[in-house]
Image 1 (cartoon, rainbow, N blue to C red):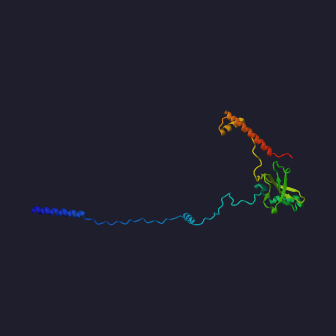
Image 2 (image 1 turned 180 degrees about the horizontal axis):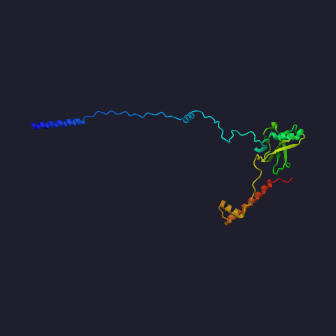
Image 3 (image 1 turned 135 degrees about the horizontal axis):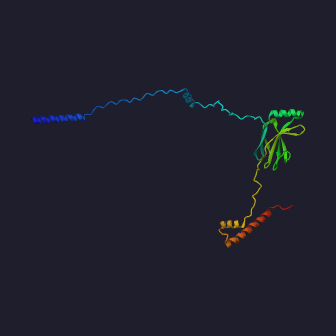
Length: 248
């Protein structure tokens, strides 16, 4: 009986131990994660200005770079004239004439300067070295109100030069400034044709052989070369006779 009691007590202990090991432990409470507190950033005064400018419309800076002018000057304080080509039939002249130059001329001429007109004298200087007196022809353009620029109607395919000056009451012309020389292009195709050049026999034979497959040494090639050259020469002579004008 004692042995049976001992066996029963041992079995009770083992069963209670197994139950204790199988018992579920209570869940541990998870600790809440604390985020670090965000610190308010402190900006300097310059950074605040930059942030504001990001969202504000751009404004033109009032500061001017040293040595840089915002606008081109209306005049440069010197007497000058320049001539340009706009198209085959129009020229463009612009100039600057100081008031001091006109006043000195007025004081020098006195009464002769009365009613003097400021004009542009346009010279045709095609194929010549212009010296002021050897122009093929010229014409005058009256300048209203002494403006500083003017469009001039011209002819295509010629060279031009312009003088700025005063036309006096007696019809004489007093030149003050002379422009550069320009050339107006032609309106249509050039009348100059390409020059014709004779082809040497060796070059002709080589070109013929390359084009038709006959070598220079081939007798058939030589015969065809002679016949072709005669045909080309005869056609050239007949075309020149037809195109050349008959003497009157």
